[in-house]
Image (cartoon, rainbow, N blue to C red):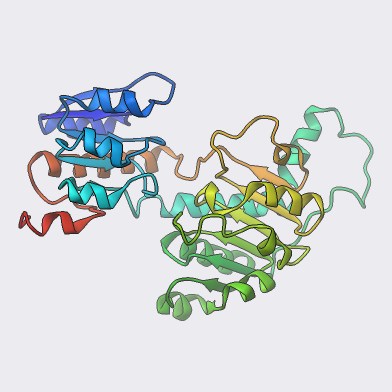
Length: 328
């Protein structure tokens, strides 16, 4: 079976594919594939292992309906038309669970870095500004005993909440589509309305999927309802916040600071105003970027590919209804 991979895959994943007898083709150029190029490369392939911002839309699926499976090297799947994939009988999978701790760690890093102006202070050294000591300058925030608001209390949100409660003794509130009894029992987390989440949070961290419901959810109206001392953190998807509104809210001191591992668009323009702000820390979408986590993602993606190659059910299937008529 022929497998196309749209990035260089960590070796542990390749080893599994090769051991299973897959004929692997890797796209190794350091530039994004256009939709037409991706369609062309998929001709003659049996399974696609998609890494990066590839658009798996109706046009792609119509042109590549011969595929026996699509495995994503990611948890997010907002760029995939699952309904159309199901109509063509193409199973689609992702790599959940393995990025939980590393992404929560990244949110924790950003929260603390923003609270202490860490990125701006580091830049000031390179600019020769570490000179006269002023005990009233460069003052950050304490996080001990503050309120952490989680928007999307899934695995990652719960992990961050546990870290913040254990280290800073933070009070945990959350807003979710449904109640999370486990988080409430283990962390003392309290469910609140979206408006209360905005109003009460000292740190508000986003851990939800990008969907029609959440796209642009954090806009000017949302930021205006937050505390002037609040820190906004997003390690989920850049499209969940309105970037221009966030810039305006920060410039006008509507909120205190922001930590972002995701932006809209990605990559971010080097002249973006957020990069020059003392109270903002931006990372280039590295939430899962540890050797161990990327290896685990590659292994999970490879296992999904191998299942598709063998005509078996993908372990991490996103559209299970595709198997109903196949009895897999």
